[in-house]
Amino acid sequence: MAEPRAAMDVLRTPEGLDAVLARIAVSLARVEASQASPVQLAKAEFDFLTQLEVARDFMQDILSRQSDRKLLLDIFGGDCTRIARLRAMCESAQLSPMNIGDQRLDTCLRACESVDQVIRSVGLGERLRAAQVSEQSAITGEDDGSTDECIQHVAAASVYECQAAELERSEDVAAALGRYEACSLELGTAITVAAPSSQDALKLRTHQAQVDDRIQYLQNLSGKNPEIPAESQIQLVDLDITKNRKKQQKLAAAVAAMGAATGFCMLGAIGATIGAAVGAHAAASEGDIGDAVRAAAETALQRAGDVQSAAVEAGESACAVAVEAGESARAVLEPALQQAEAVGSAAAAQAGERVVAGMDFAKAKVAELQASGVHLDQQLGISEGLDKASENVSDSVSAGVQRARETTRHMDEMLGVSDTLSASLNRACVGTAELDSRLGVSDALSAGLQKASGLGVSAVLNQLGSAVSSGYSAQPPGGTPEKSEPSTADLEKSKDL
Image (tube, rainbow, N blue to C red):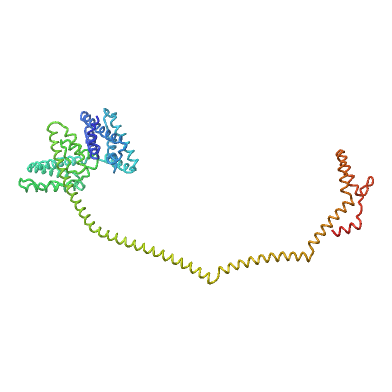
């Protein structure tokens, strides 16, 4: 059943989704641990599917807000670990035949795919693939069970440490000492069963030494309330067993089995995440267990608040230092900026004066060159010489043309070309008239044309032929026409022509 709208509003943050993912991890670990008990398995699977429904509704609600993609990317983007982890847990779930057809698993996977598509659309596809490979490897990573005993003792040590911190805040130092001593014993056992050369064994030894220092400090107080907070002496520890998903789930299940909600305070960020998940289930329990868990949760929140306050104080101190440094830098920079501005203004003014002076100098040089050109022209008489040369050329051309005309007339007079041509033309006209008169061509043509008007075409042609032939000697019958020889006078006229 989906959570109320108010719960969805609380969950719509990166931290809210982390809590959902942690609850899914715890419930999945319980499913794997309950395979031998049908009753416990049914309860574990119901819890697992309920958490998947919450995660599905969470994603669908975010996806439905098309205009608020920033929120989706703030929660699921970045290194894309959250959406990759959710998908990996869904894909690794092995449900019983009773719940294998439950639609909540399929719909949650489809919602994961929708979120994946949005992430790919903004260019985070490579990060998403890398996160999916990493989360899948973490879930399917090898776990031969060799660390199971170590995990049980680490879980117990973490629970005792958180209870000791709670008792310290309640000013029950004696009871707190008892819990710290139990924590140290569990850490010693975890170190013994862990691989001696492993990184986790070294980290657990360091953490045990810090717990022992706290025990010594409290013992030296002789019942007085401590002035040094526990987190100043006991640091968080980052164990490799929390990086393997199966081992992480076993750790969560071990703490949950102890009925504790805050048994992860020594395990850093991953411990806080899983602890929140376990607490969400245990705090809802009825009776003494629920009351104890809620009290432990309040203690854990108080410790987280102390850590947060210390962080805020450190941040404020750093901000104050930064502000002071900024003010000092400003005091140094302002005179330098003012000096630079003054120098820049003077340089700009000087540059402007140089530009104006350069322009004036250029104008003077142009005027000087123009004056020099006029003086040189006057001195050398270039313009006057060009004008005279132009006049001389025009006069020479006109004189040449006139001389050519006179020469032509003179040659005509000397050779008599014009008279000869005129005489030849006259003689040609006279010769033509005499020849026409002698041969009677014009008369014959006129007579032929007059007769043609009353005759047919053949008769006209015959008459024209007879008329033309009448100027020549008569044709003998059956022979060729005789041509009359030109007279001596005609030959002389032809020579003249």
